[in-house]
Image 1 (cartoon, rainbow, N blue to C red):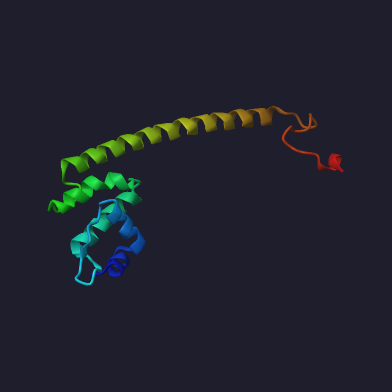
Image 2 (image 1 turned 180 degrees about the vertical axis):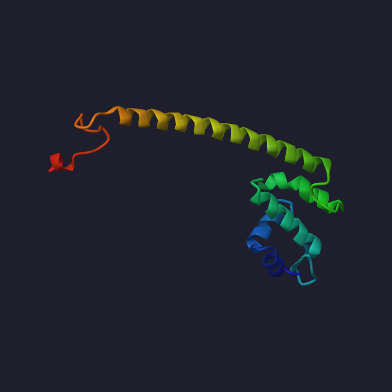
Length: 138
């Protein structure tokens, strides 16, 4: 198949496929007329790359999976290098989750403090510090 058909079947653009080719992830064969040609195995490579990118993997992190498929394995994640990338990505995700939990705890504490201060103010007390009195600016 030609590049336009592969792009359409993979749900991407010809420009993206040429970029993958420039990065060494996709290898086009050339027909006698010079057009790039691809087959079903190339479609499988693109599907693997796009799935991993949907999961948050950067393009370079997809390389071991592509290499694994090119080596003839039935799945891109059946090689040791692919498994290592999975493990590294899980470590990154765990660190991000921990960071988000910490931020959430801080925001929760700030909310609790703000609600406590707001409930402690008596009716008729001083004007809130966060509101502007637009009539003073006229």
